Each structure stands twice: as structure tokens, then as C-alpha cells.
Length: 142
Image 1 (tube, rainbow, N blue to C red):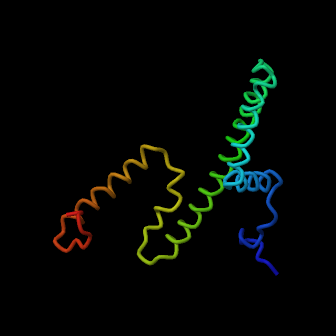
Image 2 (image 1 turned 60 degrees about the vertical axis):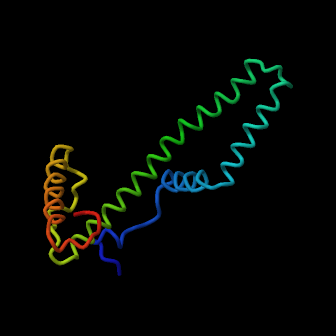
């Protein structure tokens, strides 16, 4: 019987929007999709003389590309948000399991830019100090 307090054991089927956006993002990134898009543009351009390059002919490509671009912004952002969230969870899991890791660094993505800059500055100082050590084993960093 699954543990109801464990969020991983309760993972179920994704929402319709998530499944749809995953499928669109997956197919949009394939070479065949780029070939199809290029083919559509070529057919459109070659059909120009047939329509005397009129306003409606131009409107067809303008409207369709605008709509596709508008919708793809949301699909790509949704995909990126999910990927980033999953990666942060995995990194937090690693921090929680590695002995000696500073667990207070978990969930840093929720901090504002100023606090992140302070932490980044601290790590930059630590890195500079470590590079000055005589036993620095990374070539070119000393």
C-alpha cells in the first residue's frame, strides 16, 4: 500500500495541458518539424504569383506564424518551468543525502536576487581563496 505522506508515491497521471504541452514541445524540437515548417514557407512563397502577391496571401502567413509563435511561448515556458522544478528537486535531494553538504542551500531558487547575489559572492570568494592554495590541482586556475 502506498505511503500517503510521501508525495512521490502519489504521483499520478499528468493534467491534459501538461501532456499536451509535453507532446507539442517534443514534436516541435524534431528535425522533421523544422523540415515541415520550411516546406510550408516554400510552398507559400511559390504560391505568391498564383495569388498576385495580394494582401490575403501575405495575411495567411503572417496570421498563422503569429498564432503559432504566441502559443509556443506558453508551451515552451511550461516545459521549461517543469524541467527547472524537477532539476531543483533532484539537486535538493542530493544536498539532503550528501554528508557534509549544507542543507540550508536547499530551495535557494525561492530567494530574491539580492540574497542570491550575497551567497554567490561568498562562493566566489571561497573559490578565489581555493585557487590561490599551492595544492590547487586544476590547471590554469592559479
